[in-house]
Image (cartoon, rainbow, N blue to C red; front, side):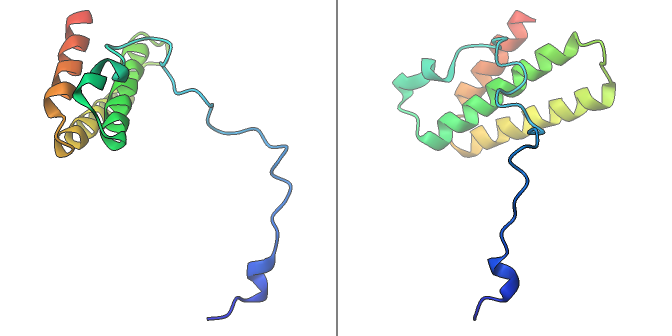
Length: 110
């Protein structure tokens, strides 16, 4: 296969645009439970650590959104479904018990 002339076209002008997503995830400053590093004794793989951090951040988003002035039920449902999906990812990565512990700690805090 050969490259078409369109493949060599440079795209420019995007440097000055503001990013749509902020660099820091929402709710990171509000801790939902233990940091992922607290489980280093478990010798987590990078993928397992990623799944746990995703779950922790989603819990923080849920905690922050519960008290938000612009609270809407459909958005909370989406957040809860995301948390469930992250929990399932953790279970598939064989860290389901750690993830459940993280969720249980969140329920005790709230």
